Image 1 (spheres, rainbow, N blue to C red):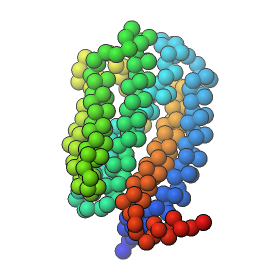
Image 2: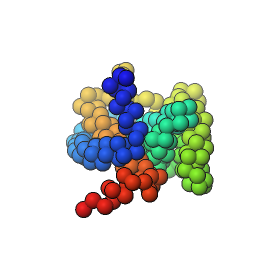
Image 3: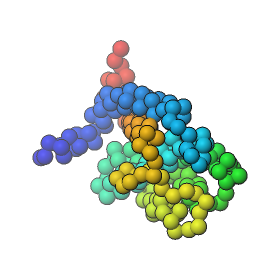
Length: 248
């Protein structure tokens, strides 16, 4: 077997995944904290004010990374759910469900910072703008996945039902992304691009990428810890868990 495929196959073993998560989650946080800290310090206090929005634009460094993560996490959750449904891989069920509360938190931050940004720009805390409205629907989908998962006692059946909702809900993501193009929207268009040309000066752009990288590292650390906790709950009573609990 290919060494990479063999590694992924072994990682699907509950005790192997537990050791992997325990080892690498702290490193993810160790990478995330300085990246987020430096990026936010530069973005909030050092880079020059925007020539149109003034200092109000600085919330960009919190709002945009959170908005991007809210969609990326949902896409990853749906991908894990699809793998779990097709190949019946229990670890993917666990990872999919661990994504939901983290993605919901990013979505709440997105909506809150969007409202704060919108007040000086639009004169209102909330407007039923297509981008804001579809992002709110995304939050409801996250809450629906979490609610469905916790409403069913059988963990495998619960994960499959909630995973199916995540797979169906992924159709919302392109609507969120292109809502400012398809409809007449108050929300500004795309400012920054991972592969294309960005609409920001490079002196204002690099702190964003630090925060963006940092929130990814933070997400993966949180994902590993949440998945590890769920994995241990499911495996409670197994010999390897008992042996681990008996260690001094």
